[in-house]
Length: 298
Image (cartoon, rainbow, N blue to C red):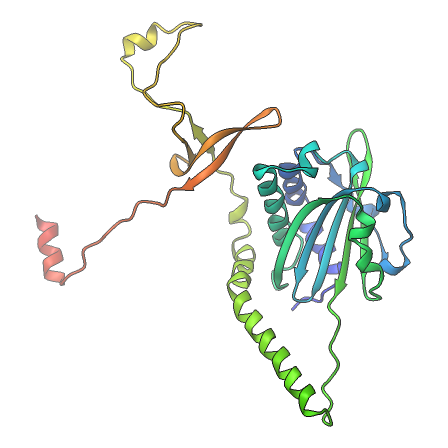
């Protein structure tokens, strides 16, 4: 397993910088370029309070089996949208997707992710105060370059405290407590097994996840004679049989995968997914070889 430190995070940042920038841009609408050549690093206990620590901003927190990772993006960066302090259902979904995608891109596949969340906080210094009390905590200060401004993305990492080795002369109560802790860890490992299996996917098919597919929302469809199509002109109105209250189809590469309703996201058009459409099931009749041959001949 790769060691839990900022070196591993820096390596993932270097390998997936463009994808990480695109992930932030999809969630926040705007983002800049991460300048990995001017990264500042050190121990979090040595970080002095600064202006960004007194203001609000975006706080992304990852709970891992090995420890915790925090990301802070101050409001002064100018990269945070207005809705982030009071997100609606669409905004909450975008923040959740941001945390989930970053957990895949920022960390090695063998790091065990327990949970991830992204939200706006009123004071970043308060949100990150727990890191200052951990002597093993580390930080990265990464410049974010935009045409109009240069800000910094703060990343903090701290490992889980190591438990002391059990003493042979421990009383019976302490031994039972240790057994309870071991039982809880074993239960958590079983519950996390499904989540860890998902972490193997980017390792095996990372290039497959970069394939771009056309994503389309279909308002309505109709068929018209060629004569009517030739008579179309600016100002003509085409009437559809579909009601304006019916859900819209979401298609990937021509296949309908979901249905939803139209929403407004800022000054842009969006789609709130209401239901997922499972792919059509195909049934193959299994039987003796002779029966299959007879069916093929027919």
